Structures are given as structure tokens and as C-alpha cells.
Image (cartoon, rainbow, N blue to C red; front, side, top):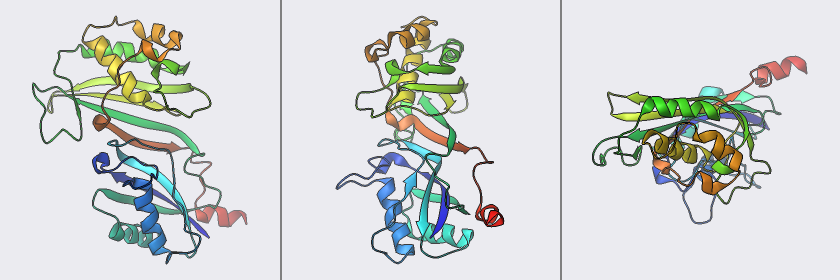
Length: 264
């Protein structure tokens, strides 16, 4: 078997999320069908392992997954073959043959997410699937100041939605920022960390918007974290504004197939 790592983008507005669900259109199932067609539909079927799950309506600029194929194709041939079979709302940007011990999920070092909030008076019909909407005035400087209190390793119990299957709510955030995009009349939130809990980014964004609007004090984040109580954060921002920007790996641990063959 030959293992391939793929980096791909998708418009999540037409999917019920990444993970396979009965009778629903999902990214994982769509990729699985394409991969198995390339592999001539083996029995048992091949599986596609993603770096993580995204919810219904969430988008990705550079999601990562891996799968095994019973025969070898060049990287470019694999990329083209997948794109010829996939719908127009998924694009494989890169395919790489990697060592057989590479794992898209377990080898992840960090992930970066972006959240876009449109600030127009009314919802722009051409943005409704790709941004959330918050028409109220906000202080971006205060939101950016408050976001710095999220940096570091914390128990994020107050920022995880019910239904999470995580064994621990402790995560590390390495970078957090809030800026205004004046050209597009949007507020852009970005977070990078070693992992994110169910709806964590969307809850953090909703909390920061309340701070920006004066509904919470600028120093409220430490109190919310210390509460270990979902009700302390309350709101969840909509899925449409969320993008998985990148999945990052420690390159010393991700061997290409050439690296692997040199050690054999």
C-alpha cells in the first residue's frame, strides 16, 4: 500500500460537516468515494483519515487528510485524478506520497483558524454563506486586548459546546488576533493552537464580540476560563464565518516516501 497526504480546500456550505453521517453529504464520504474509484473499488473499501472534523457550514482553505492506495501514482497524477472526480466545492491543492507511518491526525503540531464577521447594516446575500453578520458597533482594540488572555495553556471547559467527546478540555493557544478589514467591512479573528474543542473558536468569537460591544468588561476572559462553566460564555457564533486556514506539522516528523526509502 502507498500512503498519500492531500491538502485540500472546500466550501462547507453544501456539506453536513466533515465526518461521515448516514444519508448526509459530507466531505469525508465524498473524498472516500473518489479515492476508492481511483483504487478500482477494492474490498474492503479504503478510508480517508482527516486531520480533524469541521462542522456543517464550516470552510477549509488547507485541510489535510491521508489514505492508502494499492498502487502507486505520481503526486501530480494523484492530484489530477482526485480533482477530476470531486465536485466543484472541493479542490485538492496538493498530493504527496509520504512514509507509511504518517498520520494526518496524530502527527498534527498545530492548527490555525480564521473567523470572518461582516459589519454591514444588513446581510449581504453574497456573503451569507461565508461570513457571520454583526451590525452593532465594536471596539476592535478591546477585542484584540481581550484575545491575548486566551493565549497559553488553559482548561477551556467554558468554551466547549455540549456533545464534545474530548477526554480533556485543556488546550494551548499560541496566537490570537482581532483586526478590522476596512476594505470589506469585516472583522477578522485568527487563532492558532495545538487543538480546538467542539465549537471552541465560535464560542470565543461570540464572547469577544460581546466584549467589543461593551456587554462584557475587557478583562472578562480570565474569569470565564476560571469558571469552568459553559454558561459563563453563553453565546456561539454561526458556522458560516469559520475557516480552517492551515494544519501544521513538525517537518522533521513527516517523512516523504524518498526519506523513508533512504532508511530502509
